Structure formats: C-alpha cells, structure tokens
Length: 488
Image (cartoon, rainbow, N blue to C red):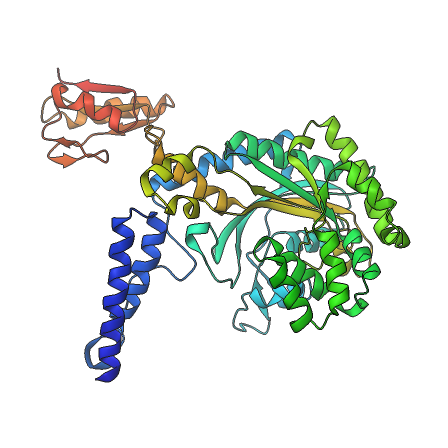
C-alpha cells in the first residue's frame, strides 16, 4: 500500500508538471515527453499490481504526422540538391553491421552502440553513424575514389532530449569525398557545402568552427599530457560546448589523472579563436613550434583558409582550438557548425512563450565532420589507406527549428501535392466523377476526390454538402488551387 501511495503522489506531481507546461504553452515535444512519463507512472497502478500496457513510442523515438513529414521532405530535398550540385552519388548500407566492424572506432562513445541479440551465430550492432559503414563499404569493394552522399537512420543509446532534437533513432545526412586530391581542397568543399545548406534553410546566424586533430595531439604533447591519455583528454575537451572550463579541468585532473600544470596549459590554448592569423601566430609559438604534428596541422589550416576565401565562406568560419570531436577515427581537419541565433522564430517564441523561448530553440551543433584518412585501412586486409573527408548534417536538430518556424508562420504547410479536387454538386454522380478523375490521372495530374456527406476538413471547416457554395472555400484549406465540379 505504501508503494501505491508513493506512485499516486508521483502521478499527482507529474500531472502538475504537465498542466504547468500546457499553461505556459510549451513546445509539443516537451509536453509529450512529460505526458509519456505520466503514463508510465499510471501504468504502475494496474490491477493486482500487474503492469498495464502503455501505448507509446520507445524512449528517444517519435512519430511524424503529415505536416511534420512535409517539412522534413522539404529539408531533405534542399540538402540532396546541394549534394548533387557538388557531383555526389548516393549509396545505401545495412542498418546493422557486424559488431566487430563498429568496435574500437568511436572512443568513449562506443558505450552508446546498440547491440543486437545473437541470431544465427553473428554478433551484430545497429549502426552508430554512416561513416564507419562507408569505410567498410570502400574496403570491401576496393573503391579508392568516390564522392558520395547517404541519408539514413542511425541509433545511439544516448540520453535523449527531444526538445533539443536529440533522439536515440535519428537521420544523418552525410557527404564524403574519398580519394587522392590536392591538400585541403576536399576539406574546403565540405565546409562550403555546410555553408550553402545552412544559408538556404535560413535557420538563422551560424558559425563553423574548425581545428585539426594533429594540432590537438601536438598541443597535448607540449602541455605534458602522457601519450596514453591523449584520447581520453581529447574526449573531455570535446565537452567544452556543454560544460564550463572549470568543470572540464576538474574532470581532467580528478577523473583522468592529469596534472594541474598540464590542465592549465591546455586551458590557455583552448581559449584561442581566430582565423589564418591565429595559425600563423601559433606557428611562431615557442611550444607549439616544437611539435611537427602541430606545425603540419597549422600549415594545412592556413591553406584551408586560403581556399575558403576563394569560396567566399570565411565570414562564418573560425579557427577554434577548443574544438575536439571525440571520435577516434579523425586524423586531420575537424569542423562543427553551431547556430548562434535561431532565425526569426526566436522572437516569435519569445513573444508567445516568454522565458521558455530561448530553451525551445537551443539546439547546439547542427553539422560536423572531418578528415579520417586511416579508417578504410582498418578494414582492408592489406591495410591500404584511402584518404577521406566528410561532413554529417544533424538533421533532427534542424527539424526542431523548422517545425517551430512553421508553427510561428501564418502560411499553411501543404501535406499533399494535389492540384485539383474533384466533387459533384449533385448526388448520384459517382460514375461521372470516377471517369473524370481517371482521365486526369492518366494525364499525369495530381487529383484528390471529395466523397461528400458531413465531414470536418483538416483545416477545421465543416462541409455539409458538396455544393459549389460550401466546396470552394474548402479547396483552399486542403492546399488545392482548383476544384472540378460535375453536375452543375
């Protein structure tokens, strides 16, 4: 009885949370997340202590209604057009891979991989990203030169934050260039692609941070980080976009065993931001100049900025020494795009939701990538390396912004491509209507059919009879520009 009383009290508290969010007009995703928690609590009060089945999607996943899918399709089309404009072709790979294919490629993030139960003797895992399967594909098919894009779902056992566009099942949109090219030209093209996509989607102001894995390793070396701690310290530095420097330093010293002196030296470097001038200054730095790795990375950063100037994208790019993408397979330039202002939707949400506005559009990184020259060689029996560089668009976070923009806009989102709606102004004309729509379909015209009777339209209009008087206003709410009426 005591447990039951505790559950009832928890249900009461959770109900208040849901009511408060609704009164504050919080985002639908945030409300749905709290409602799901409420339903889980209620399920624990089943008859005779038996758990009741709760009809919901698994944690970290969601359904998409026609309006949301229309927005997603528009975003996908924008991204695909950009990829094709740059000459990419598409491939597909299995949604699950052999476990050994994914093992040892993601550093500390390997714990987020979903393992599948053993079926038929093979140990399998759901793909964590699209990059490692691509490298396996190149090695298996002995491909040494390709420019490809791939849009598909990936899976991570992460702690989901639905309102920030972080899920356990989500799409990635990847663009990669594999093969021998002049230094930094493919890298610059990937950054150009990010710039084009974010500009075309009109998400608001953004910044693309760049760094180089060799610069990071050189920095760690000259700061006194032991070789065996490079990867784990890099993983901690990667948290600087979510944690303060004080917390990052505390983790380095208390959890990773790094000395205070080494952590302080790292702190001086990771606070630096700039452009080509910063790369030139670091090449003259008495510590960094001692590392051949760091000097090679800094020289490539200078060359990268030269090409970015030719592509006219340097206004959004910053050389940031705090950028440290945690994946083990990166070998050279790394980059990440973050939104610094979430378009006009911020102002609209602020007026509607008050203090919740900033949180509702806080989505963080929307793209990331880098160079991974050694990954294909890990799968090749002879260890043959294929130079690769790529970028992944964080599509779910972009959708979070686009959905809020659609909600704030007075313009209706079309969920169909219907050009003509067919109806009759009199009853008993079914055969005539079917003949008409058949001719229109055969002519390649997209046609919708009104069946008549009392019905509430998706736009909220109630139609009593399919007559000219009530039908024509209904056409516009369905997104069709033409109504074909028979029997007048």
